[in-house]
Length: 123
Image 1: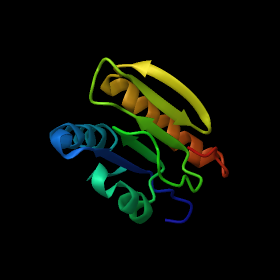
Image 2: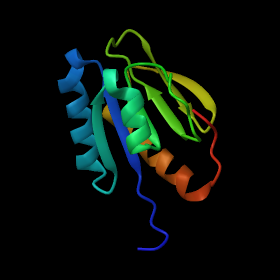
Image 3: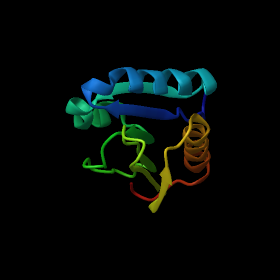
């Protein structure tokens, strides 16, 4: 269909947290079935970002990859005592131990952003 934007989200974490990233990916896919979700290890992060070109990356590490206009990067550390850091449309914020609802809100906000704004901030 013309005008349809495919929303792509990449979930990445270290190999010891693979179950964690799979569960997050499955939960997003279950609650937002129209969103295309991919999961990857951080050892292949740069290749997956290049190949998949996600709008949103949810990753256990900070962004070390060229943004290329990527609207959102959510650094979600596996340690619940560390703050999660969100870069959204070039703006930065932190949150403590976000629940699934917070992740889904970021997915929804990213979708709204790419549907309404053609040149989003780099994250």
